[in-house]
Image 1 (tube, rainbow, N blue to C red):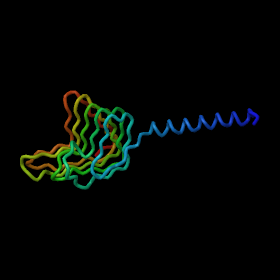
Image 2: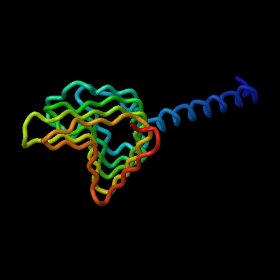
Image 3: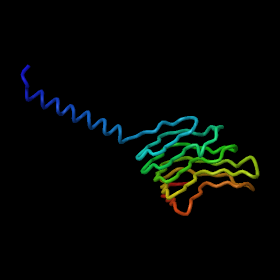
Image 4: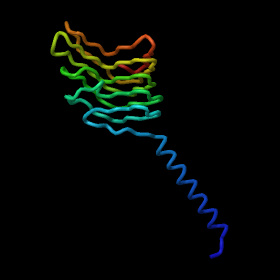
Length: 161
C-alpha cells in the first residue's frame, strides 16, 4: 500500500484530536456524589457538581464531604444538611476550595454536650464562598456554620445569604 500524504495528514490530525479530548477529560476530574459521603483527597482540580447530601449518614466520617490535600477544587450547585445526629458538613484540610451556589443548613444537636458544624477549615486551607445559602439553628447547644483555624482563610464574596 502506498503512503498517501492526504491520509497521513488526516491520521495525524485524528491523533491530535484524540489527545486533546483525553487531556480535557483528565483535566475536568469530576467527582461523583455518593450517598455515603464524598472524599476528595489528593485530587487537584476536582469538581463536585449537583450533590444532594440532605439525608443522614450514620457511619462516622470527618464530614459529609471531606477535602484533603486538594488544590483548586470546586463544589458547585450542591445541597448539604448537617442533621441533629451528625457532626460536620464539609471538612477541609490543607486544600484550596471554591464553594459555588452551595445550600448548607446545620440543625441543632440533640445532646447538650454535642455540637454541629457546617464547614471546618484547617491547616493552611483557603475557602472561597461564591453565592449560596448558609443557615444554622442556634440554641443553648453549640452550633457553628464555620470554624476556621488560625492558619486558614475564609473569603465570602457577594451573593451569599
